[in-house]
Image 1 (spheres, helix red, strand yellow):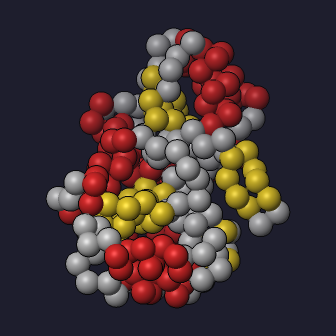
Image 2 (cartoon, one colour):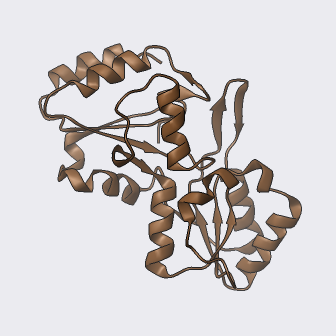
Amino acid sequence: MSFRPLLRTFHTMSKVRAVLIDLSGTLHIDDDPTPGAVAALTKLQAMPGVNLRFVTNTTNESKRLLMERLTSIGFQDVTEDKVFTSLSAARTLLETKELRPYFLVDKNAMEDFKGISGDDPNAVVVGLAPDEFTYENLNKAMRLLHSGAQLIAIHKARYYQRKDGRALGPGPFVTALEYASDVEATVVGKPSEKFFLSAIAEFGHTPEECVMIGDVSY
């Protein structure tokens, strides 16, 4: 991925007031920055009158761990207040609806759900959690859904990019649970319209004033 054409475009787009930037697959792949990403981000951060917000469906690590990763591979001034994650959106939904989730979520991401009770679950929350997608765990989730629990997909990506190539995302597992239970999932992350609107809400900009940079076309 090259950011140079995008930077030239931004200089000619006077109406751009905010830039939303994806992380995994766009700024970095695992622990390596994508080519030109560090320099390009530095230039974007220096552009006057343009707000930056990092939006990510990353669900296999908490926001704190994500910040540590980005800093360690060379990205500067990527602070927590500038990052909007699908984990944050999921937590907001759980709290708003007072749901008690059964989590199929990576252990490294669970600190973002600290204080959320999972006693007597009435919801199933699915993120990217390869170690959690066992037959027994998926079967338990299916039984909860048949008992009336809500199904919440932190996102439904079909795959994601690793150093060794594409790998299954949470989408196929969410779809399997939908099929097995006849329950439609509520998707809280990208490409949910509400996710993007929430990400730009504090800026007060309209969608027409925003640009999204990512590695997947929705």
